[in-house]
Length: 446
Image (tube, rainbow, N blue to C red):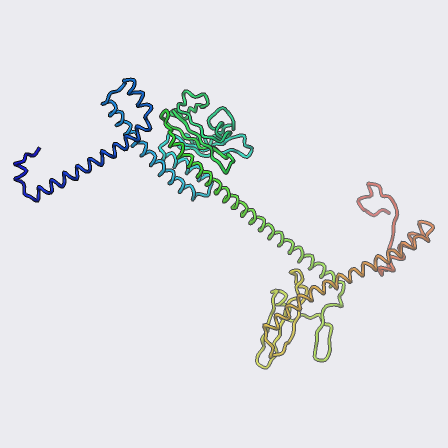
């Protein structure tokens, strides 16, 4: 303690600094003392019953009360720090998992984050299957967890186990000492587990899985742990729902793409078959109508002509209009293909007015060619229908004559005579008989 004489020897400025410093220290001590009193009051209010028992029982004295309060203060500081760590970890895990849209990545990332941020021994996630009878392990930490997942570890919903109970009732379940609780199924791969906490993962009111955390300490899970992990499972349930929706949308998109490509392939095949059928029927039709090959308009008359010009051949082969601009003073020509269902069945060529715009002429010719193709096909179908009707009528006439026949020979004569006349045949024959199996080789017999 500085005496008065030495204090008086100090310069005035230094003495003022010392006085100010001591005044600040005194005020700080008063504030700390008031804060401690307030904290003690809170602690005493929370621990009043236990402290009252100790005091009334004479277990502790006045010095013991101070020590007891000091221990409680230290415990509260630890709890506050733990609560802050849990809140920080919950927010961090929630932010990270909310961005993950792949389910496998979400599960694996979640258990690793929860184990590291919450400082637990082991963390795993179970998901209830579609039948709601089995909870299947989908993610588990460490090498042990990887072995369990690869082994397709699962627990029956409603079984006498922590996960079985939680996935059935949808409420958190805590085991303070795994060695004393009959509901705990001992896992030889996790021998250090001493306490366990399982919480349901919900999608609305529906139980979709469970989060299981394990600790190496007995009674390691406090109320704050449960509250923090409940927030975590809520965030996890939302992340799982989002990932599933994204997965469903991706699957639907892929299925739509597959159906689209299949439809395109089917459409191309249909178009190919249509072109093939159109080529065949029009080839047969033109072969039967040899006199019908085309017409040519000259300044004086319309002539039947089958010759194709080079421009018409080129337009047919390339399936597009061909514009031939001749030298100055000459005439230009425009040729367009006549296409029906993708197959070219003819071509049109004109020598237009030199003053007319080429684009307008090409567009008009293409429109006319499209409508001409449809009209030609309709006319062909009408002719075929008429021919079929004539043939059907002739058949009916032949059958009508059968009514006048009295014998088999008469029927054969009527048939061969009418057929040769109808078909324009010079000769014909009919044979009756039942061939034996050895005659089925169609060899001629004398």
